[in-house]
Length: 170
Image (cartoon, helix red, strand yellow):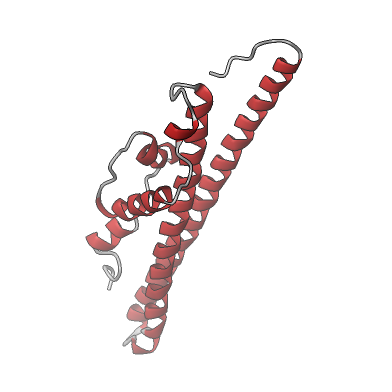
């Protein structure tokens, strides 16, 4: 029973997102390809990105403009966050179904050891759900903090411009 919902395929399925926010952003920023079950995340991010109505190339006359680059990076962060949210939602829905399946097996435990093993698997699955929640909250915090930092930079540049100093947009 120790391998219940913990096969190599189950372990791979739990690794549907990179360990690092920057690696997740690389899906859009550099076109990085994610391996294994992370493909679901990549597909979710690309599907969200495909819905984008803004075309940087059409809106900015100079694609090397730092403002255009910053706008694109901000958009990519938002698309990555939304894609991760969708992938996490799908994964947590699957995980909840697995926990419910384990709960349905409680009455079929033949002895105390089997009941303890089943309980341990349910605790493991619930721990994975909590970990996914923490990862999503961390990604949200990172994205919010990055946006605040960029907004702070823009406010400083605007104040410099108003006072007569030409800001550096790099």
